[in-house]
Image 1: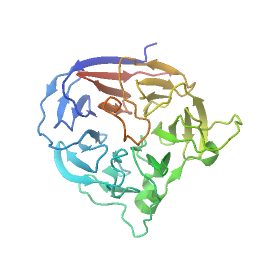
Image 2: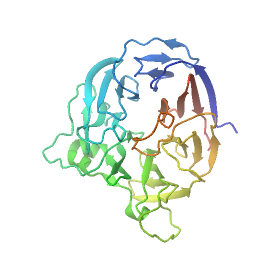
Image 3: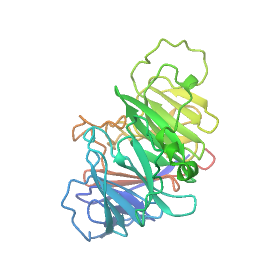
Length: 343
């Protein structure tokens, strides 16, 4: 059974990757773009700064380039600068810049980031910069937000960040509620406590649909001696699926190796990105395929401080709606398109 199609092309000096239709765009590299066969269009600008990552809106019109372990970003529209973005300097050199572009409930492209404080998420209109979540009632809890992602329907936001000492945790937020009651963003909703009684580190997470999230645990032992009652819950070196609306753990698995960053491939698979990309079934917990020829870095959670060059994730692009991935290794770009119908 063929689960995916794979192709490659050659290009030098790629700094970031985002999908724009069937093209791949290196926004950090000035807007270089690559067709499926590798045909290249030249960049339109050179950014004389340390930007090393990018994310784009679902339609590809807007993009943000930023420094993963820095404080500076640029919001672009069709490759032109709209405005500068900033986050707090506090611990910025340690953990990944929190940023996401998504379609709001009324169709506007919104930007989620932390412009005022490391612990405060705000929404703003991408086009105008108008802040939509300002309120005198805002009193954010002490949480380092990172790796913001939005559910496929744009209804919920996920933050895979951390708290001191440090402990990686996941929080989710209702987008519509945040727009009407901004203080909702000050606490959000964690995973159900009975599903993580030993405070296992929730290292990474991704949306499977508008209700369910997959969460990967660290290799660290849980803090408390918790008996195994056989119920699904997050365990060290584990992977679990949660329904955030019902606050339940649906199923869980033990893995042979930590998952690292995870990306959804349809509703029943995730792509694990620790060392090499690995396709994992959420029905069985089994690794279905490993791309041993591809290097995908050693990032395990939002804290990237201390990773050397070889351990840092290479430029990669993911598009959940079309189930496709692109990964840069050296001068080779590998495109993977998944076909998981019936699986």
